[in-house]
Image 1 (cartoon, helix red, strand yellow):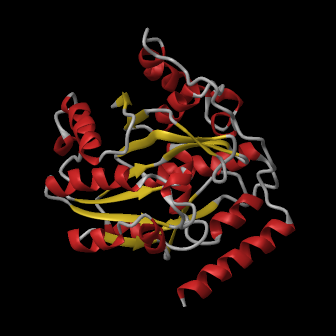
Image 2 (cartoon, one colour):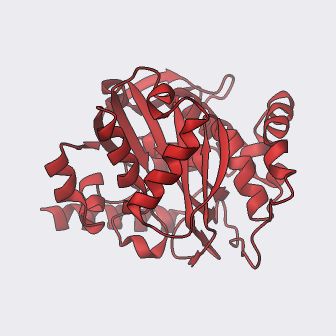
Image 3 (spheres, rainbow, N blue to C red):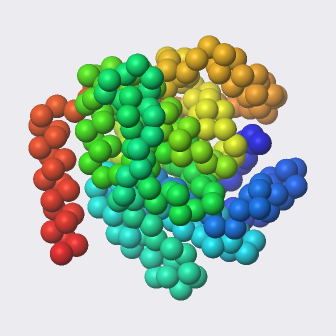
Length: 311
């Protein structure tokens, strides 16, 4: 499944209607769920902050998907491991935490680790871990925010699943690549493959440009991308913002055979007469993929502040 949809407002009913219509061509939402009735949503939270800054998936976006799942008779969870803070704190900033409790939506903090075989031949990424809490769910739906990224050029479906790595491991895994963005990209790809989402639904109603993954400016992109393949979603987004995907760390890490398959699958959407790239969308400036000692110290201080606030 691969669809590029138009949506200009964070209106839950409109988003539900939009997605319901999109799913009709695939036999409906229940058919896409493949019989799974225990479904975890993985939004992008980064850190607990207001949704208007556009660094996080908008609450009306992921809650509209949660509502569709509840209406389909599913048990629903929302799970994340923000760079700072917690999933619970993020939901509280978005003013939907109480609603989640009332609706029986489980709040899942990624804390436990499960090991798996990582990047073959890479001594630092040969053995990797991902959140063990993912095993408690029959299916995972990825709900990324479309935005630029100062270290990775952009973040969409693939990079959002990096949030399935627990706690500070995300931060330190940046440094294990020895400042090699493509090496880092290969690890990100292994992680996305391991998480194995059944669907990716990207929030591009308001995207983030100028700087990312936070601290940039909202951009009214007016798009929702739905895909069952994370690379196809990311390829479409790159073209929407006039970014050559082959210049990015992610797609430099993808094999030539995979690139051909992705290009072929996306060709109909990108070649359509009504496809138009965003105007005046600004890419971020770029920094090293690995963090400096100063960044490491600042990260530990931020993490400590969030812990003290919770206490």
